[in-house]
Image (cartoon, rainbow, N blue to C red; front, side):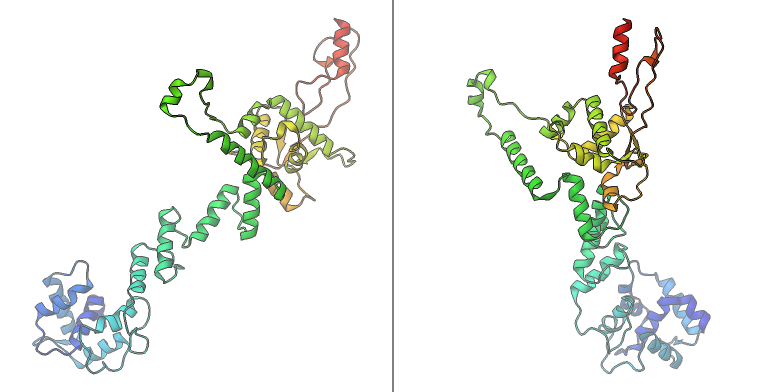
Length: 386
């Protein structure tokens, strides 16, 4: 009996259930196939149905002529439904919705917990969860399911809520894989994107954007007005953001010299022999310089990397012992291969005093970290020999 039932599988169980419900007349094989066709996207053919019926007859669960359940078949059908007896008045039309749908949804069929009325939204939610293969933690409400589908279409099939998508996207923009709380995420994102702190700085940014918007959104002239206006009076379109233009105007070598000077100033008075400065502290030193007014933290870091690539200064991962976690995060400067935290200031070596007539590279004493700069003493000796 067991092997025959296993061969016929769920199709055999459905046949037993259909025969469990009383009919006004003997159930013909063709009617059996029609009543069970609703359970299949592609219903089995007549041969497959006949094979299943033959297996059930062989197992002693069904009598063939006419088709009806044996006592063991009736017992097995009731066990499948999870009830001791089928309630009086049960019909094949009501049985699937009352017993089989809850079972298909992972619950248990029966009169105790079967829903009295079908909820279209809940049923639709369950169908969609399976159809879209949504994450197991997706909620059962239609709203939750639709939100999970949106997450999937946005490229995050493993997430089930838009809040999770928001979290992941902002963490990616921050360049971190760390799971941040809501307040930390907002705080770090604002500092990274705006490069400002405090309400005063934000008010200034609002005023700057307001003025810039006013400059770029001047009323356009009509065709007739444009034709009549002298060439010098035609409006000019601003194609580059003012802050971007200012940062590009800062000479790279001058930028490096200013940054290195600020870094050395932050180490002034230190007796620890430390020659590394956190990038965030250097930024705090130079951000008020007139030539740096167009920079924010991101554009400053980008310019730092450019100067590093040209050998005008040196960035390093460095030691961050004793620094706060916030300073370390705000110092992070990433390129495709590295993450830098500090600006490296190399130790200044004693100046070499060449003998009379000594010509060559030893005439100049360069301050490490400022390539191309000669000391005034070396410059004076060159003028003297000339």
